[in-house]
Image 1: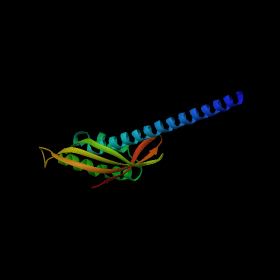
Image 2 (image 1 turned 90 degrees about the vertical axis):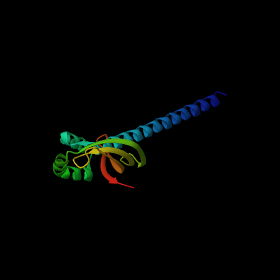
Image 3 (image 1 turned 60 degrees about the vertical axis):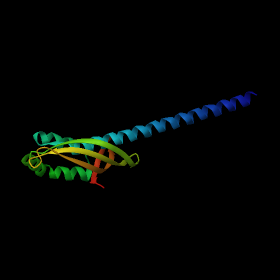
Image 4 (image 1 turned 180 degrees about the vertical axis):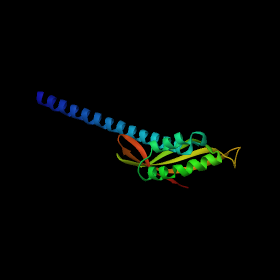
Length: 154
């Protein structure tokens, strides 16, 4: 009887440890998923919210959440965009409507985002509604999810 009790104790302890590990992994996976979606939402919001009155700050926010090719391309176009946005007195107020995770692993992710923005400028002083469908590729660098690619889709 004592041997059976010892075996039962070992089995229950092992099962408890295994279940605890499963719960921990599920929570870690859900947290990673939420972190990816939050980063993608913020990146899309930054990308669709630009104001000629403080474009330097707005473009810096885009670059803060960017890396790789996307960061290089956006940085290379910043001077030209600053002039264009100022000349047209452009203001774009973005709003993220939906974001969905397409795929992810520990180092990379792809997210589809639907965002609206109201754009006012010299050509449309009353404002013009725009809807964007964006595919964002993100990578995990230095403990943060950063946007490495943006593509307009559908």
